[in-house]
Every structure is written in C-alpha cells, then in structure tokens.
Image (cartoon, rainbow, N blue to C red; front, side):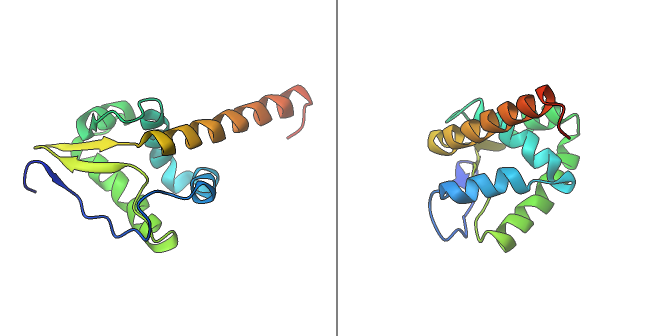
Length: 127
C-alpha cells in the first residue's frame, strides 16, 4: 500500500454510533479477544497513532500473526455492523492504528461500568 494512504472504509457512517460501540464491546467473545485487547490498548491512547508492530508486541504475536488476528474480527464487523473497526488505519509506510477520541471516551466509559459491575458481583459473591 502507498505510504500515507488511508484504508478505504466501507462504513455506513463516519463515526460509530454509541449504541454500536456498547454492543461491540459487550459482544466481543473468545474468538475476538485480541480485538478487545487492541481496543483496550488504543482507548488508553486516544487520537495517537500506534503501529501494528507495537500492537503485535502488546499481544505477544508476530506481525504476520497480527494481520491474521485482526482479519477475522474486521470481516465480522463489516458483516454484522456494516462498519470497519472503530479505529482508523493509515499506512505511512507501515500500518498505524488510531482510535478517535470520541470513540475512545465511549469505550473507556463502557469498560469502567463493566469493571464496577464485576467488583459489585464479586463483593456480593454473585456468579
């Protein structure tokens, strides 16, 4: 891919609707656990470009494995949500991933609520 080129996004909207971000974060299952980890990593760095190499290192996989890890969830998101993943991908010359601040803030709020609910469940000794 040409340096500085941004991947075309076949999304219906430019920004992810909040309810779809909630659904994405809650629906992430075992097959997409690495997508969840990537979202966690990017939401803590809103608006910052993070290289695919850095994400691969964070996940403990090679660059080649990282492309495979991200390919499945990206296809599922396009099929189920009619959206690309909520982060932007730019090649300059290597892949750089950026989660826009609005999406990062929404995802951080969801993550916080889930953590609080988990702590409450643990304190009540519920499942």
